[in-house]
Image 1: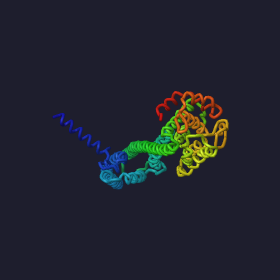
Image 2: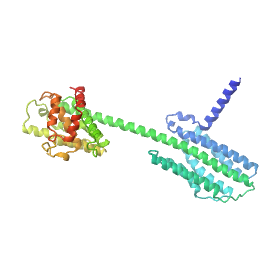
Image 3: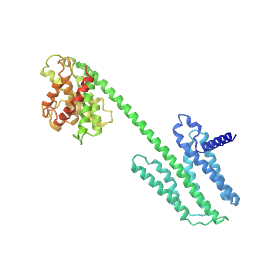
Image 4: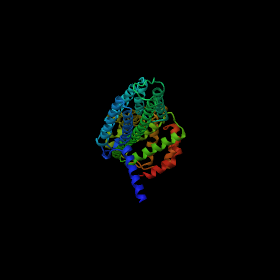
Length: 432
């Protein structure tokens, strides 16, 4: 029997707690679920204020102070209306927030006037506390600034209201009761506002975090889709000269492994930022996009090319840059476009100036292109083509060593040779 009574008491307590801090049932609706975290603190705020002003109303009724009694009757009606709106009307939380800010500001000024206190700028502290919710929570500095503003505004509000106003009661109210009500009113208002603000901040911060995660996921999905489209497009182009899609995959993985080694070794640290590395790897599949302008008869010719035919082959670098400019002109990512164009245009240039199309040398050649050059060269020799057999990778590495400082950047060459085991693994895993 006692256990049943205890369980009934617990049930009542849970219902009361849910009544004060729970969210309205309509927040289960998917269109309103995002606002559930707003309605819980608002619900608590309104109900506490409702109880508080009901007590004030009874006190003023006991002392027969009609003006204050009327004022608190109006406050009780307002808060009861807010509770009903919040509990049963979808989307009402927005109106309630606006009405609460207005009511809180107006209520405090009216209380001071009716108590006979001097009004002052301290009441601007209340909306200031609410406005700090607009400050983001990213970084320790922003959190610190927000907390400092809230603390200063809160302390300023209480100190100025309680200690720096001339208390001149206009009604026949005992001094102790008047001061007691004033302190209770200000203190409880501050506590309720602080709890409400903290919960709103927590809600806003969690929404911001969820939104950031959602945006990051969308960006990753878009980048992945963009990357897959680029690879598919590049595979179709490479297939025209007898290459398989594995060429694009292999060279992209060679580039990724090489830039990682350069970064880990501290080479070109001023250039190899995370963004530059990302754009270089993403641009790798586009290095031969200009081959789409070269006739099939030349691309698939098994014998030696004539001088005129080789000139057409060489033009695929310039044409590749032009195609990227035209096809991707609407892309707002200027840094990616810059890297992609450099990879397409300069990946056949040589460190000693003997390459094409312009014969530039050394660090005049963009780093992304110097990286692409050695990756493309390794795959061109180690993979089988219609016009040649595959060369053993050991010989290719020896060839690259001999071309250090000639065709290839010495620093990039050293990094490539340091990871020859990883390069071999990529080549074997993606063999034609």
